Image 1 (tube, one colour):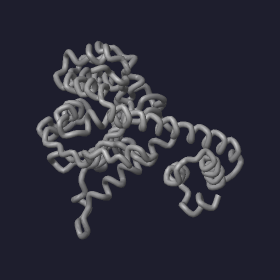
Image 2 (tube, one colour; image 1 turned 30 degrees about the vertical axis):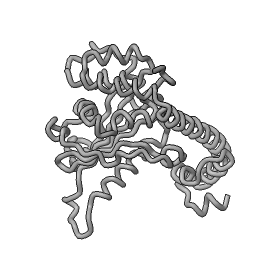
Image 3 (tube, rainbow, N blue to C red; image 1 turned 90 degrees about the horizontal axis):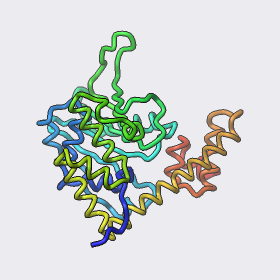
Image 4 (cartoon, one colour; image 1 turned 135 degrees about the horizontal axis):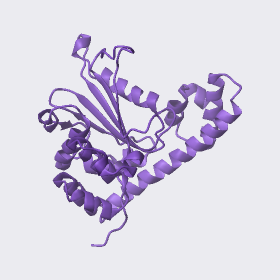
Length: 288
C-alpha cells in the first residue's frame, strides 16, 4: 500500500500515537529510562492514564495531546511535545505540574501523601535558556544545593540541539540512547529514522508503527488536523503578542494583557486560549 503522507513526531498526535498507547508501552518505557533517574523496574510498571484519542479533542483547538502516566511507585508523569518554545513556557509547565500535583491528594490526607510529579517537555525549536540537550529542574537551596523536596521535576529536552550533536559526544550509554531517541523524534527523514532504529529494538518497533500510520487515511486526517491547529496557534500568538506588546509597551501589565487579548480575539483565537495566555478572566475577555 502506498504511503499517503510523511510523518514528523514533532506533531503531538503522531507523538502520542507512538508513545501513548498500550501496545507501545515498552517503547515508552525505553524512552523514559533514558530521561529519568528511576529504576527500570519501576518504569516497567507504568500505567497509561489517558489512552483514548477523542475526535473532539483532536479537532478542537483547545485539545492538548499530552501523555499522562503513573509509575509503579505512584509517581505521576506528564509528557508533552511542543514545536516551538514560547516566552511563557516556564510558567505554563509549572502551572500544569501544579495541577497534576494538586490532583494527587484526597480530602483528609496530609501533605506528605502527595505524589512525586514529573513533567517532560520536548521542544522543537527556540529553546534559549542554555545549550544543553537535557535540562532537569528541581527545588534546591541556592548556596548549598540541598534539595527541599524530591517531589518536583521538570525536564526540558532540546530537539534542535540534539539534531546537531554527534553520537560520539557522549560516552555514557544512557546519554547516547537519549540522544538517538531525540534525533529519531526530531527528524522528518525516513532514512535517518531507519538508520537509528537498527541499533534499538524499541526504536525499530516505533518506526514500524510510523510506517503503518503513513498508510492510514484516518491517521492522515488526524495528523493534518493537529498540524492546522499548530499553524493557527502560531498565527494567533504572532499577531496578538507582537501587536499587543508593541502598542502596550508604555502601559501597565494589565492594560498590555487587555490589548493583547483584543488583538487575539480579532485573530479569532479561542476564548480559553486567550485567557490562558493573558491571565485575564472570562468576563474581561468577553467584554473587549
